Length: 137
Length: 137
Image (cartoon, rainbow over all chains, first blue to last red):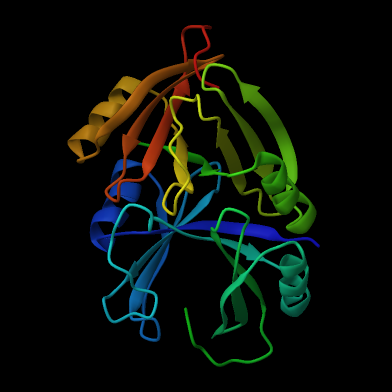
């Protein structure tokens, strides 16, 4: 199966503070930032100059279904991979030992399922969606 | 200050298992893998097809100075940024509230210092070194 790693998503304590840090201090470019009502949170996507590595910042309000109290260990939010066929990808991943963590989530044009890697890290698998409903981001 | 994000470095429980997962299951390419005597550990670098996102896997033996027992929360190892002037970068980061976590570490051609981002995540800053000694990777 072929996957494409799209970005690394970290969780942040304070969105404004982290956006300032990664843009003004470390020179990344802000590609987009939006609140998401369905997850009661906010995301921002940053791109590094030259290397084009992508970093997503995720913030969850205390009302978000994804919220947990902040403590050492919540910073690694997820790694995002694009796949062509989501059902097939989930099947292949489960056969490789991955556990299903959540989803499917729908966003305009995309359908996502969260699975775990061998270390417990959340892998967000995303594939082009056939529906236009939006549930996550 | 301009930084370039080079890769995301996660920590893994079992190097062989994680390399298999990210290459055979998720289709990334193994760009390099090496043991590092000075840190009593091993790293592997993976590249995603098409998107060229880079993921580094890090494994530390129980004798490594970077070793801690595995628990939820150690998976996010570090984000690596290249900078031109390491001393200036550390100064700018510290003025922005970052804390120095370790270093300098030397590797052939590179000098690195670890600092924290506003969320406590380790940012490895790397700049071209003037020395050829090797201490880390």
